[in-house]
Image 1 (tube, rainbow, N blue to C red):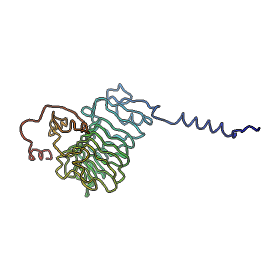
Image 2: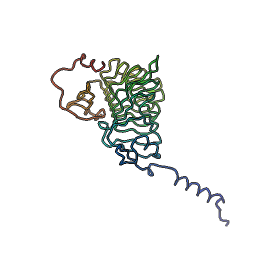
Image 3: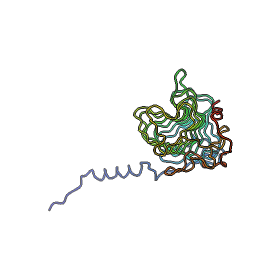
Image 4: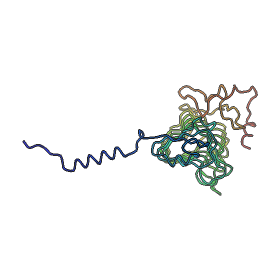
Length: 296
């Protein structure tokens, strides 16, 4: 009987496949980088380490205020060492969002836009797919000169998860003060607090966006909570619209008071970037007049 023979090209094919597996980056090959402003890490700026990192790497950021634009790509994870209360990314006057994300993860930062932003998308975070988690998005401003820009806080497209963020006090001349969802957005917005955003509806959805809204508190937005094709999620899937009981929103303290409805609800867990930061609400009643002072 004649033995079957492998094609002569098989060894070359095997060598090619083996080289492909060994040389293609994967999550198991990932390394970590450290950003420390005192020079004791790999970099002193966030973007420097992001540019050095390879696919699936993690960049850890020490506490501090980083005055820079950040472009996050390459399936990276940008993670703060100590959370959003002590790790801030900001810029004073820009024509771009403070942070732009392409298929990567941003976890545990305060993103604070500066005094003036003129461009078409947003002032805080522009995400083209990926995850935005445990962040505070505040003071995002955007405009397009004579027409409204898309969002003060966040503009999102692609496959996204936006979870456990506090999105507050954003907006200038925008369609959405908090979150603008493009028609290509496919994903989840869950366990966020979207509150006290100015001059525009808090969350706006273009037709075609496929979003699961779950366990969000959208409240105190004087121009409305949801717009466009978002529908009205409040009252379904754990979505609420009640005072989150910030410790001191007027002075930028967005931690939660003991007894906040955002600390724990059945089926939802905590909403927003912060847990308890102060005692229960004072006995004096919060009035709409007091809330309006936050927008002056």
